Image (cartoon, rainbow, N blue to C red; front, side, top):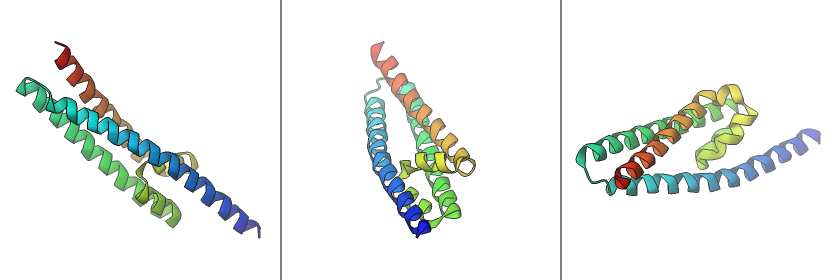
Length: 129
């Protein structure tokens, strides 16, 4: 009976983390939407092109990190792969439970987030001039 209780406890932790990660996913999409709106309102073409390239690079890194963490999740356990597949930011829990497997994916997530924030600052700087 102990393995079942531990399995249920792990499932509850993963589901709670999935809900938290879902909220973080929504926040990330809001940040991406804000960055895209800022890029759309940029006045000068060179700044808009640079911002668009940075934004697209961030998107590519974000999805590469997502795929990497899903693959690492499935390599660890089918439950981790499934929760990472359903809710991309559930990888935060995966990072705390399995730091060696999630390290590269989380670094890619961090770089993508830095690029998104850079686009927001670039757009703000361009609009304030």
